[in-house]
Length: 164
Image (cartoon, rainbow, N blue to C red; front, side, top):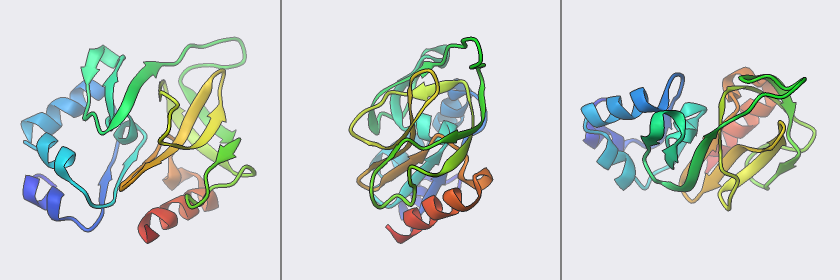
């Protein structure tokens, strides 16, 4: 979607994400979509970088993001046995009801930055730190993991979003 009115009118909206926060936010500004995204009240899901863009700011190049969710996106730090980027399968350790995830699920990640843990967090994993794997705040949903690569748990998460 490249038109602000289409963003506002969409029954459901996916804010995808692969790449860098600064570049993505600049593209949204260039297309005139920031105000539409901020004014939207319909079901919206951000995936990976798309979820990160929902927060106030990112340490990635000091990027000001959409500010839909309070908090920052912070660079992850490598440690022995825990490389960054965090790529691969990680078990959900805590999940809220209604988001389609359980504590027995493993989901697939590919990221170097993680959002602050907070009231919007709907599922968590640990990768040297607590990492919000999914969020839900009102009409906003997010997945730091890649539901499209996470098999049945990813499908359940997307189905829960579609049913919301």
